[in-house]
Length: 138
Image (cartoon, rainbow, N blue to C red; front, side, top):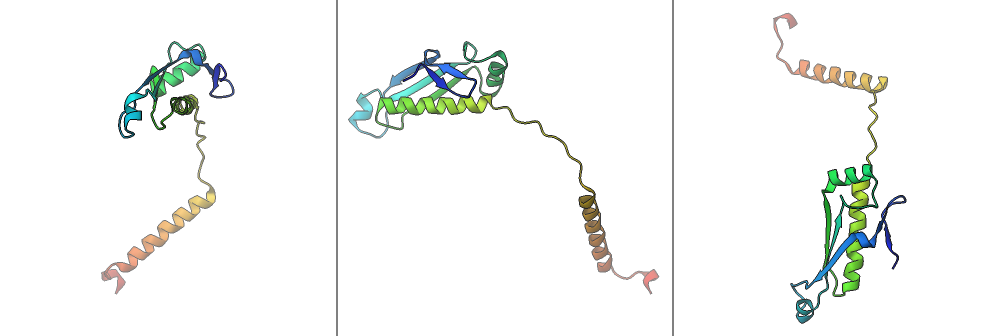
């Protein structure tokens, strides 16, 4: 195991910044689930992290809050659950760091404007044909 978790090309979180605790998972599984501490709870304090720049920290705080908490009790093995928890943490932090592209507003093309107006005219013509004839139509 290396010391850092690679989140993005520019962000690597040292494992020492992760608070990992273990407990019994409970639920189905018989005595193994009740007696062995295979459930993993991983906590990451966003505000105290040295791995994030100020801008990244603000973005993560706005999206997920001051702490990222991940729980894994999918497997019977503590080691596998720890790997799953770390993988989920990386995905969650990567999503929080993602910057959406700004939308560039575009104008409708001349053709689309023409098609819209033509469709409106056709619809109006159809409705005019459905009317009862008036005195002017005699």
